[in-house]
Image: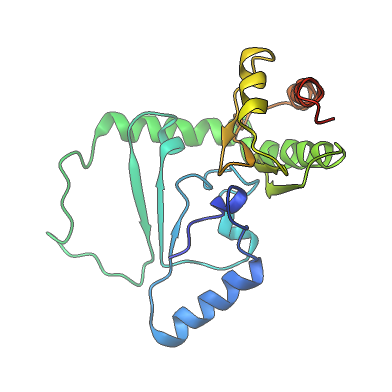
Length: 207
């Protein structure tokens, strides 16, 4: 089981070749390849699913969170090779009509507003801008799923971003700031973040 590309945090992003070899080995030994796309799916990385960069097809994909824009919902996408049988699966809240309607509306917004393409373009722009800032150990990610690794704990930096610059970021491990902005983020908003991020770095004596 490989967990999407959530490695923008404390671990590395799985290499595309690694995923291809993993697919081959699963086929060789009859193992089921399950990919967790709960955070990395639905356009977050600039593709609808993160694993699509590698060109492979998993056997099972787990999805949740953004698929209904915050409305409680989760799902499992299963390969046609698995034959479903009545009574095989059971769930208390399965088949929730409101959740399904919400999920369909989310897909319509994705299509109408080209959110996957926007995530790819603005995400790459943001990555390029971050890589030009001195004092950052490493910037990694895809689309709008970005990790900014520093050589020092980022607690004070994040606190300054929130309290002074009014910018909320996530964190992954002690030294990594995690960016998961809305997929509708514009280049102008990305520029504004860069300005505020540089101010926060300077205020903390890191720029």
